[in-house]
Amino acid sequence: MSETRTGQCLCGAIRFKAVVSPDIQACHCQQCRRWTGGGPLYSVRVSDLQLTGEEHINAYRASEWGERANCKQCGSVLYWKMQGKPPSYVAPGLLDDQTGLSVTEEIFTDCGSPWSVPFDGASQSTEAEEQAKLDAYLATQK
Image (cartoon, rainbow, N blue to C red; front, side):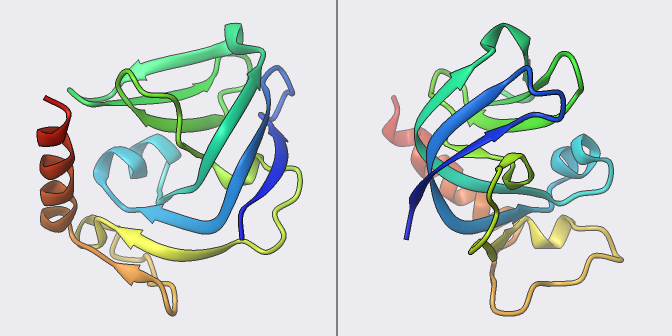
């Protein structure tokens, strides 16, 4: 069940409040592994995101469709989002209360580090499966 939670980056320059899903997604793609220094990138779906300290957000256009953001002050990973869309996922480590969260989905599993261990009970999908989902989504946006 989703509930409203608060969070912040390491230095507190960026704070947020959002409705947060308890389901954590773990992305093993090469970009996420490089961005996190080893990966995967853990993220939780959010809605009704309210940010403060937006002037401290450093946005990076990582692909033709995606954007990654971190704090300019402390470097904390904040979110990944589709270009032109509001953030719909944030890093769960930013949440003030992380109780009740669990990894339920792993994506780009065929791209993961060889030392990465799968999460018991989490659904898994490959790069090809995720690319097909992205292509289908992008086709609806034209």
